[in-house]
Structure formats: structure tokens, C-alpha cells
Length: 299
Image (cartoon, rainbow, N blue to C red):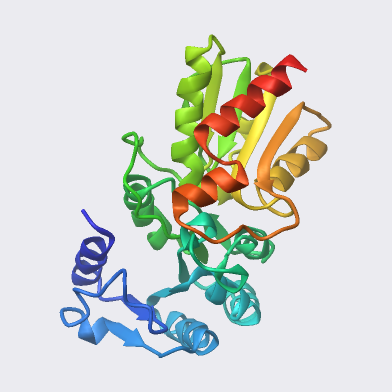
């Protein structure tokens, strides 16, 4: 199933859902004429779109808002915080081409602080699926939740079949004790391949797909910290405010520490290019991740 097929089925079965966009129809291009009574395009007006969504939510609708991730999170931040977050309205905010998925675009279009700013708003949760399969497994629960949600849209081809989804519960592959790799979103595929490379070299690996970055699965993370020699965090996001920071908050809250190697963007935007070149240039390929982990374990 595609995302737009999912939307069509959702709207057909439940008239409360309103699909909205600010002139970014890529994810719903083929169904707008079929859901015209439940479809609104506000034009390039992300703030207005969020304000309208809040008004619709107050009247019993469930708006699903679409725009480029960098613009819907940053241009609309005050509207999400004030109109949606404070009132805890069930508005669902879907950000297109987040993180490295904006590959060829420069810093203005790179949403690499989106997780940080969205999770910082009280009541707003964050879903960062690994791929299309993970996204479609999670969206029914995410979209039916009474809470606001920010979704890092990801329709990439899956490298595994994912398990059933539950908000606040991570998905774990393996029970290794040498390394636990924590990841969310698009980089799951590279992390999964890194796990295979490391295991081929005799390492015992546990891979944790966070799925919902907020609420994060604290229990699963703490179990990994207690049982594994090294923790790696992998994210296409700034180091500050994302998964590395979430891990630090969990460790401090529980009076624990860990040996951690972070893979994140350290105070810089990534160099634009084709996606495979971006990954290689910035050091996020499975080979680069596994090599850095081996070096860290041997140090």
C-alpha cells in the first residue's frame, strides 16, 4: 500500500479526517479529486495551514497537515506551539523530505533540527518511521491518537518487515551485548546493514528502531545501556536536541552513564548532493558506521 492509498482509505472510512497541504501534493497527487470534500490546499502558507487545522480540530475534525519538513516545523513553530500544543489538539503534522532525504537541497531546505524543536513543545509527539512499511504500520495509531503528532514522512523501500506498532515502544533486532545501535527514521537501513557487517566480524549487536522519538521507549534504552558495552546513536539530525540528547536525558534522569558514540551532524549542515554521495561524504554509510564502531570498541 502507498501513503496516498492509505489516506484515501482513511478519509473514505472516517469523514472526520481532513487532508491539508500548503502546495505540496506529492504524497497525495492522485487522490485529491476523490477526497475533494475532505481536502484543502492553502497555498504556500504553512502558518495559515496550521492555524486552520487548529480551528478544524476544535470543531471535531482530525486535520492531517502536509508541507516540507523544514518549513512546516520552523515557519509554523509558533502556530504549532500556541494553537496546537497548548490546546493539545489532534492535529497531525507530516513533514516531507526530512533530514538527509532532502539530499540535493541546501541548508534552507534541510530539516535537521526538526525533531529537537517539535519534541520540545509540550503535548506534541514525534513519529520517525524507518521506511514505508514502518510508516504505514504506525500511522493508524498515530492518526487516531488524541495527541498532536509530528511525522517525519518516509516512504523509502524497507530492508526488513517491521513488527506491529505501539506508540512509545521501540522495535528491537537481536539481543547482542557488544553494541546497541539506537536509530530512527531513514538511517535505519544503514544501521541495519552496519549490524550485519559487525556480526560478520564476530560482534554481538542489538539494533533498536525507536519509531516514536517522543515518547521514547526508556525501558528498552535502559536495558541496552545495562547489557551492552557500547551505545551508538545514529540520526540525520543535529547532535544537539535529537537522539543523542534524548539518551543523555534518560541516563541523567536514571543516574546512569554509558560509553556512547554518536553519528549526527555536529554543528553544521550537510553538503548537498545525490543521497548516496551525501551519506558517504558525511560519514553515514553502513561501512563507515561499522568501521567507527569497531575502532571505538578497540580503543
